[in-house]
Amino acid sequence: MTAKLSDKVAIVTGASSGIGKATALALAAEGARIVLAARRSEKLDQVAEQIQANGGNALPIKTDVTNQTQAQQLIQKANDVFGQVDILVNSAGIAILGEIDGANPADWQRMFDLNVLGLMYTTHAVLPILKAQKTGHIVNISSVAGRIARAGVGAYNASKWAVNAFSEALRQEVYQHQIRVTVIEPGLVETELFDHVTDPVARQHNLDRLRSLRPLQGEDIAAAILYAVTQPPHVNVNEILIRPTDQER
Image (cartoon, rainbow, N blue to C red; front, side, top):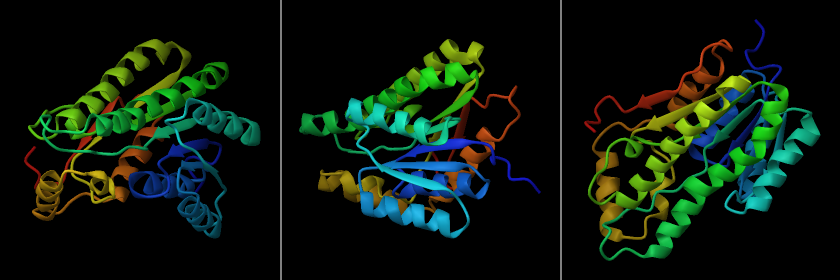
């Protein structure tokens, strides 16, 4: 059988671990040529080697998407090397949790720079290419936190609500160019996401919550992304909300 993405080029940010890594592997398994972007070059190279060992084609590019110039260079290099860009998966993100009172606003800045502005920079850079091709698909990783606000998660909520709002406005702007936009909203996923939480109380609370149920794995989210990007061109899966079975909210 022909691989579903054998004629596609996909850029995946945050590809060194977690959802981004799982997505890169899943798309590569379906034949896509993969451009891997993240800040940790050693881990990025390991993912590229894994893809290549399985017969795939991967180009690792060390990138900090919070730097607009680097985000633009990532998109341009991908297009220069492969001659096209078909899929952009904006997976890079962090969760810095804790109550608003007493928080360090510098943490909010870090989170918005990556979760929101980094996603916007790569999207902004890829749009002229997708419009010229009259085809393309942008997948933005949001969260259940982009739908439901909770005490102790306010700043992260705000960043993911921003992703949802940006994505819907983007969809309305680009649909006539045959560009699809999908938002993926995972519940609790077992990744490195909580490693950046500096508030010890918030970190412990969320680790306890994670251990209280059977969390999703990066591969579960990758499967949802693969479903969205392999639909027929006339089908745009706008949102996928995916929780562990035993997660209440």
